[in-house]
Amino acid sequence: MIETFRVDPVFSAASVAAAEWPLCHVRLQDDARFPWLILIPRTPGATELEMLTPAQRAVLTEEIVRAGALVRQLAEMTDAPMDKLNIASLGNVTPQLHVHIVGRRQNDPLWPDPVWGRPGAEPWPSEVRACLIDAIATAPLMR
Amino acid sequence: MIETFRVDPVFSAASVAAAEWPLCHVRLQDDARFPWLILIPRTPGATELEMLTPAQRAVLTEEIVRAGALVRQLAEMTDAPMDKLNIASLGNVTPQLHVHIVGRRQNDPLWPDPVWGRPGAEPWPSEVRACLIDAIATAPLMR
Image 1: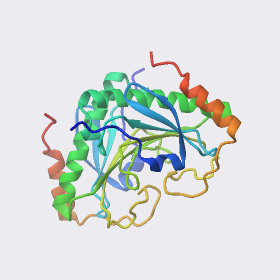
Image 2 (image 1 turned 90 degrees about the vertical axis):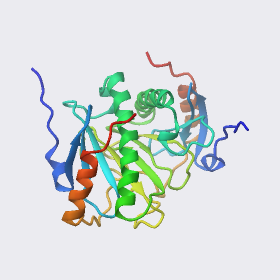
Image 3 (image 1 turned 120 degrees about the vertical axis):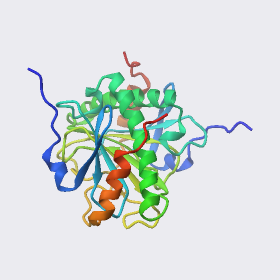
Image 4 (image 1 turned 30 degrees about the vertical axis):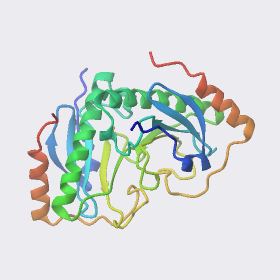
């Protein structure tokens, strides 16, 4: 039986689909406090990094780097340059394997604490969200 | 000028050196609430994943998987199997590039929240710590 990949519907509550990369479904977190992408490898049933093959993990790592470059770009489009990337795969609440790439600024409302499990998300204004999704969808592949 | 790799002395306050792997210096977080390793690539001056070469990143990814398997083993040595790996590279407080690999249990004191930036660390009893460090130091290489 071939399992089909489906994005856990829980992600729809707080993020929007933005692109499909070679390994990952890419989402924009709908929170104007942070430039924040989520990568979800299209691997049915995966909950831990070790469940990907070494080749898939290598692709994931390069897609994380690509997402980091894009988060830097989104930061400058929306406010000010970011100071630090926060990269994490947690899954305590939503087990489907996913990686957060979050741009942090020293003056953001949660600095230096982690962003997960904290209230206060502020949805992007719809025009800005559309502009960010366009930037993600048209981002060049890594050289 | 060749910069020399040095572990940021801040790490000494909460973790102990346990092994040297091909890319990373490996530390055991001194907190009996969680089986928790820290990997620090021995790359002078690196603060973000993108500052490693693609080849170094691929090695780091496989060392993260190896650390995850080891964290599972430490969990069973000390209490009960873990439920979820939490993998993160933050660096908001200590910029030197490092990756946390934390074994989480649904009954741990912070579940499902992230562990970083929260007080309450409980140092390992010294005999247990020595035993864990021995397990880390003698862990087999990945197949």
